[in-house]
Length: 216
Image 1 (cartoon, rainbow, N blue to C red):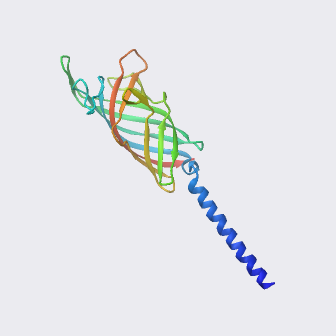
Image 2: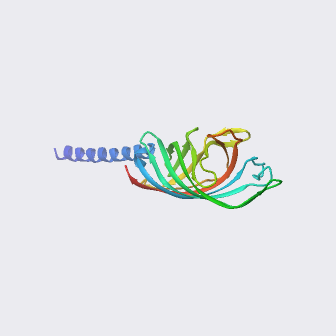
Image 3: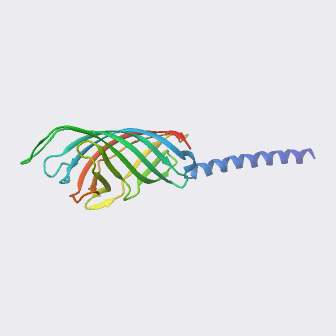
């Protein structure tokens, strides 16, 4: 009888251990969407080189001139359990002076923008979260400054004449409450003004920022 009780005790311990192991494996192999559900506060910096003429293979403006713009951004980013999300950001922008050959020189300027977009996201076991912008949703609208009230749609990344969605690989802490990111290798973005007939613009930007969890 005593031997049976000992065997039963050992069996129960093994069963409990197996349940813990299986739970751990399920957590490690899951998408992890539950870990980042809710609203995050965002703050970050961006600098862009804008070229209406596009860029050559050395990532230089085709016309030999471009516009440097710097941004400080803040706002909120919301993650849903189903792997989707949205961003609602506010940007303060400063543009450096520039000269267009045979046209003239333009003074420095400043302004503000509202930026919104929808996205999908995936996570990996190594702490990487990939955020991909839903095409047709990345809208930037000038609310002050000389470019007001222009609105632009960022169509995506232009590579060899092909547009692909904007995507960033970011790092997320194990508790899911802090996400940091940088833009990675330089990409050429194609933009078009959506409130007027105009030629597209192109830009190369580098970004860095942090998202801090606020609440569900």
